[in-house]
Image (cartoon, rainbow, N blue to C red):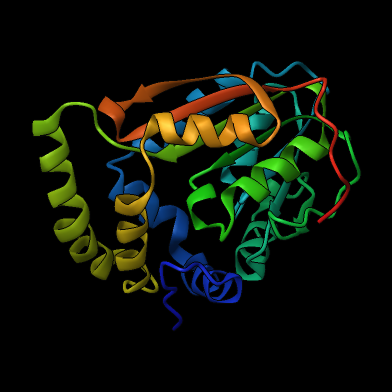
Length: 241
C-alpha cells in the first residue's frame, strides 16, 4: 500500500487514503480515544449553520463529518480526492442522502459563491498548497459566509506537549498496527501533524487567503484547534484553479 511523503504529492496522498478507507473511521475513533466525535460536534457548532444552508465539507473522507453537519439542518456536500474514501462513504446507508463529489482542494469543481459556508476537518495539512485550498474555499463561499478549519495543532502547555508528541510518534503507530488497514500510513499522519504550523501561523494563512475576522480556539489542550473566519466581502476571486 502507498504511504505518502511530506511533500504531499496529491496522487500519493490520495492513494494512501484509498488504502486506509475501509477502517478509517474506526481507527480514528480508537486513536483519538473517542474524542473525534466531540471535535466534529464542536466544528458543527462553530459553523453556526441555519436550516437549509449549503455547506462544503472538504476532505470529507467517508462523510461522517457531513452526517454531523446534517444535525443542524444544513445541506452538506462531501468533497474528497480519495475515490476509496468516497466509495466507502456512499456504501453507508446512513449517508445516502449526502452528495459525494470527487474534487481536488486546490481546484474545486464548484462555481463562485455557491456555498453558505465551508469546513475542512483534519485535511488541510494533507494539501500540497494549503493557502491555495483556502483561496478556493473563499471562491466557492458567498461573501460573508463562514469558514471553520478543524485541524491538529500544538498544545500550549509544554509538559503536555511533550507527552502528546511521545504518544503521536511512538504509541500511535503501534496502536495503528492493530486496528488500521494500512498501519504505515499513520507514520506519515503523525509526522504531518508534528510538521504542521501552530495556531497563529495557520490564522495568518487563512487571512492571506481572502478570509477576515480570523480567530481560533483550542480543544483538548491544543491537540486540536478550531479556526473560524468570514469570507471577506471585498475579496475578488480570480476564478477556478
